[in-house]
Each structure stands twice: as structure tokens, then as C-alpha cells.
Amino acid sequence: MSQFTVYKNKNPRTKKTFPYLLDIQSDLLDQLRTTIVVPLGKYSVVKEQVITKLCPIVEIDGVKYAALTQQLAGIDRTLLGAEVANVSDYRSEFIDAIDLIVSGI
Image (cartoon, rainbow, N blue to C red; front, side, top):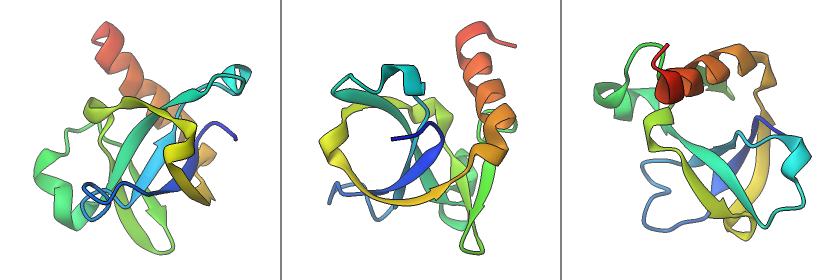
């Protein structure tokens, strides 16, 4: 598993709104059973929840998705579906969003 990898959301209750989960946890913690994820929703569906700087927009297979950082959660790694993409090109945007939550800057 690699930081900033996108996985399919296997949860039947949430996968319609959030088809993907973004793993943001450091690779140094791969031995843990859990990981921290940010749900990704189609921008056209979740745009009302998007807060500038807090919700980076990424593109996967030509579709825009918003990372709803304010809904980050820790989950068991077994709940992650198939690997879809790596979005490490957006690393600084994700770190900025997490900094905003933690430190307000």
C-alpha cells in the first residue's frame, strides 16, 4: 500500500456517493491494520460540500472528484477495494488540506 493511492470503496452504504477512498497514511505505518482515508466523491455530486483548500479536486479517468478531507476516517485495510490510481501528484494539496484541519493554516 502506498500513500496517496486511491481504492474502490467496498462499503455498500457509501460507495454510491463516495466511489473511491484515498489512503493518506504514511508508508512508514504500513504494518498497522488500519489506515486513514479521505472519501472521494464525484465533484458534480458533492460540489455543495466542497470547501476551497480543504477539498482538493483530482481527476481519475477523465472525471473530477473532490477529496472531502473534513470526512477523513480511520478504517481497517481489509475494507479497501481494488487499487484504482495513485494521485501523489496532488500531494501538496492534500497536505495543505490536512494542515488546515489540524492547525488552521
